[in-house]
Length: 260
Image (cartoon, rainbow, N blue to C red):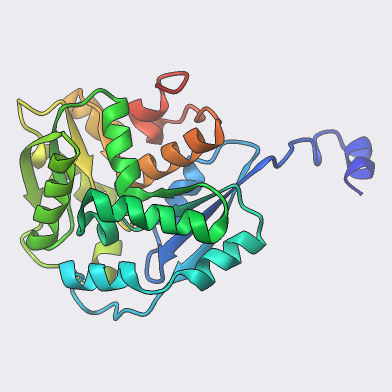
């Protein structure tokens, strides 16, 4: 049928769908998918499943994120295995940031063992993106509660990256409130977080509309910006051996030519 359509209408069915990214997101997360689609190059498709079992009205603190990360992922992973994806991305940064690099690696390894295909965690991707840009000192901002933000900063420091400043929201936000934040919020918080000693700004949380603010932030501070969803997609594409498409939202991370 594709050959018939292609012959009748040039361009129909001409682009091969060669690689599939499987993405697991928290059930209330509505921003990771559109962000990741914005960074998905031709020939790559995105296949998403959700993980629930939490109260969206509760403030997601460290204990809640640890519990969420440790709940069974077997069904979600199997759904993506059924779709024959080439890599599985775990789209929740704080779930493993709260427990440190060793847990994050074990968590990713467990997904890989269950699925039989490569896996990428957002926390691990965040660190890889920072290092690929050659950043040794960064500013940090997120919509997390203070305790969780502090643990996230500690995760970054344990990864041999200095955090020279940290800014968060004055109000504790539940999952739905985090998801309702705007790119304007991300822009304002990034500029507040920036510091003369910082070589770049890190914005953590997959359900935060920070991706769309990257071009404006980088233009304002003249430094690279790394966000959770941007880093996650970069890591997935690198795992697949695919160079990222040049897109403004990808910032300097996505617009440097070949992989570093």
